Image (cartoon, rainbow, N blue to C red; front, side, top):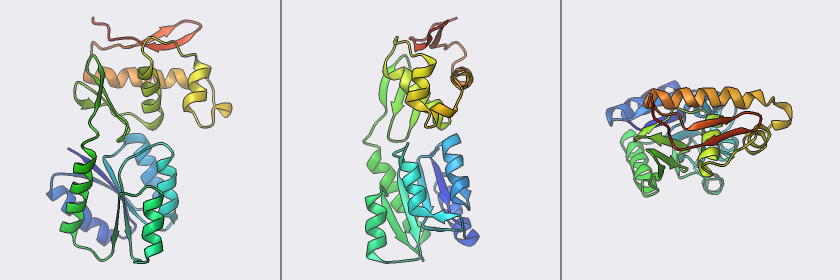
Length: 226
């Protein structure tokens, strides 16, 4: 089931959208604040984000810019304004569509389906041994099932997958992945490696592809069995 993240502060509008999305088979998650919505996305991801421009805790354009720093997830803006400059700004910062209130819920669902159909051409890239990477949606799959990774877990596994067998030191991983590496501890890498391993085992209990090199760091090796 594809997951839609809705960030909209008007409850009546949100209820209508959630109902329409669920009726068409989508899993629709609603947050009324931009910061809460982005935090949810970092933790759980989504296949598409519907983002209101006018939110109580900030401008939707700015939240989209923050999202675009680490994800190419499709974004649809909702707004009460119909100024051409707003539409241009929204599209220039990476939005895939722009819908002006009031709107038809059926039209909104149709637009969501059109966006998802369009990006479906960006098929998952097979890596090997059941792993697939979808960089457009910032997801990694194992045996066709998406791993429920946080932002840093995704970036960590993606980095290891990008160079199988290469050993990355903790310091290298900190520099490549963490935006505030200088203020973080290297044991943060160890903690995230542990959770990634656990999430891989939720899908395949015998899959253990991350190898620890004592005193050196970590590497991705093709899954060992047993």
